Image (tube, rainbow, N blue to C red; front, top):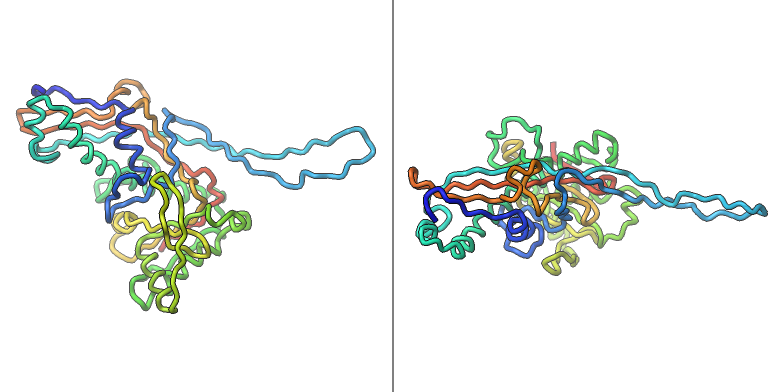
Length: 347
């Protein structure tokens, strides 16, 4: 490849090799920054906005028949309409020639794009995994001073932003929210606080959610909350029953509380510390499985169509001996059934 010439990945290849694998659990996580996105539902054909249709069954449809010949028809379902939208996002970065991998410039100069592509894909996969996870959970397009944070948290609105919106609207009632203690849950003196946080989420369920099968629910917590809960279980001389859940990667055995799987999200703690400052920050989200949505468009990288078939553009510039890359995609999140959310976050 000559100086300034581009190597381009189209949106479908970007989606197949980099975006979608981040939501499947089929690839290695990112350790302390693992966002645990495998239970998100990925909608891959949202170029701008699509409606989400929720069907709420209505009971009491059986009625006595009188002597008349008329039948009185009852409505058997109501629909609540909300939309899921995507937002155009991009990344533009300069890297020195050795930063992708040793020998990148040689492979580029020799036009060995098969080797070049196979070696840089893990680089972008890892980077995208973390950035998509931070935005899927904590993104807020209205957040000011984004340069003050260690993570990407302003590319598109994430689940916490939607939860806060639905709490303000009353869609998620106050009875389904709580404030966990802001203490060190890994300290034996505060194991009880970790247990209380998990128990509060379980008790915060609406009647309809309580009657939902427990195997179809999942409780997301920060890692310290799970560690403290495990410590509390040990302190009373018992063990936590494991539950198996299925996902794209197969079966996964998780800790549980009253039959509900508990999934720790390692990424939450460092992001909460970045957003809120140092301290003991805890968060719990109890919901039904596959209630959290991620939207993108696997066929286009932007809305206007100006650069729609270029999802990743990499080129080398001799003058400063650096690779440059430009990345484009559409992304957004939403909650299918916000009424099926119990939320707790430390003050």
